[in-house]
Length: 290
Image (cartoon, rainbow, N blue to C red; front, side, top):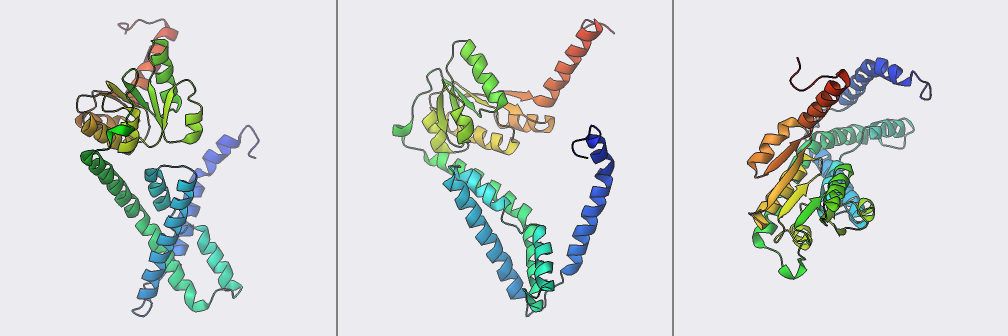
């Protein structure tokens, strides 16, 4: 059915059943877990800690080896530190085939569920730690020898669709922005610009891009948490900097202004205005028509 014209409607009709099946699956998994006895509690806690530590280290190391910045490796490692749902199916199959001792099944399932419960809190702690580290680094300062002035005083963070459009418009106006991009593949596409491959939340990266002498910073990344961290680092390094920030959703616009963004482009508001303008033109109406 996936290749049929009605596939989208079929998926939409089946969406409520998907929610029901998810509920049944996780409820059945929850029933497999039990409150560990006093004798089993140390084993469950040790297994949970071991799973989280091992998976975090493997995922974070793999991300670093592929060239990802430390912040991305940290958050990616934490996101993958929990045990996935499919592990319960594998554990049950191993138990049925007598590959897993019967006494191990319930503690392992309980430990796995505990990792799922802890994962959101680990992610929140990771964001807090990464933001705190970035701000601390900016306060301590970075060696000026690594800094290179932005040729036109404009730095663009992010070279996705929004960042490319900003850079193109600046280039047409005769400006040569510095591009900061953490994704090496996207950085490769920024030919013709001076590119700093690194995380915009990193003090070292922003200093290398010339943030201390820049006149303007344009943040095009979609994630509001990342934008807030970049804004904080930029303000610490250059208090007089003019900052333009993209807000993916309306609810993030005001907090970004409070953090010191001079201009916040509210995507939801801008899309609404654009759709209204197109509708007026198609209907032959002027802005004052009723």
